[in-house]
Image (tube, rainbow, N blue to C red; front, side):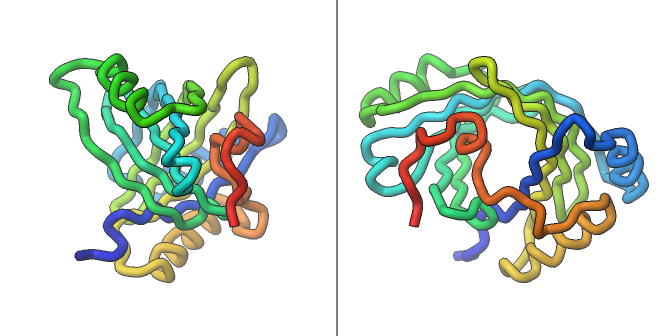
Length: 192
């Protein structure tokens, strides 16, 4: 089995109102993405009793491109973590009721909804994303670099570093927390 198959390797940067989005977009466009998309994404997160004990959160994502149920491990640093995606497909529409029924059987202890307005640059080896995420009156703007299909963590981090440099980011300035940590501080259990 490919050890990298269920690994998500990414860097996330929180950006503020002073962030020069136009320059960032020009730099990302200049790299020649295979495709670029803009979407509104709805992510619903669930922390279950087992997830709290075994350190993972579930995410139900629905947008125009993806419909997934995902298990994400909870780590101190969100740079490298487990991510297992189940494709629910669009053939049955948004299956929110079915997902709610499934996770209810697992003992949900917390749930949170996030709406993201995303701009994605798709490259063969990396996704570069700018988004504004909001929930319950809170909002955060981020830029993410997620490596795709590399053979090792080292290779993935090298790919991320290349895109960061090309768009004006420094890995030392990245956030170590997840989006859930940023929008719902203190909800997830502490990580070692």
